[in-house]
Image (cartoon, rainbow, N blue to C red):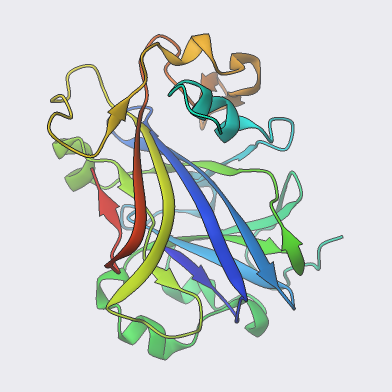
Length: 253
């Protein structure tokens, strides 16, 4: 779900990568080009378990690897100073971003009012009343900042059926619309035991990701402080284009 706390003039070339690092946890990497006149926050609602805590989300700094998605695209043989967020939520410096995780909707309203969405928005999206929210503060101007990345706990429903969550609902003007213009490239890696993605829009990379990604830059300290990787080095990746007008919903694969 790509939600902004205020008006944005332009959002395009959104890219999202998803992978389950365990039955209970998933990673997301998110990048887009954006133009905005004032500082805004991007808010990503996440289907986290109830009673999640702020430290349950692990932030991953991809500032040292700004070309993550460009390198990922190679595998498919295609051409291809921030204001401070006040309040009681913990604030993390994740590369160029000030970031916070609100385990509940109520927690999100500890942020400065300039970086929150109106309560009317959430009344029109009742499914998100028990979600958590990853929040990145964005600088004004026209920019393509480095990818945003984190690992978060998954709900039992998603972990049991093996589905990956992509936050793709659009709120760009403070209103909830039934359809939205997508300009998205989605990438994923599935568990080896998952059913093949056949007869779908998903394209598989001809080779495993260790042949085209910089694996040294994909490592991070997981929730137990053990070294983990955003990607499964020996597995292939899949990519799908969502460009055009689609139903304004999150995508589960």
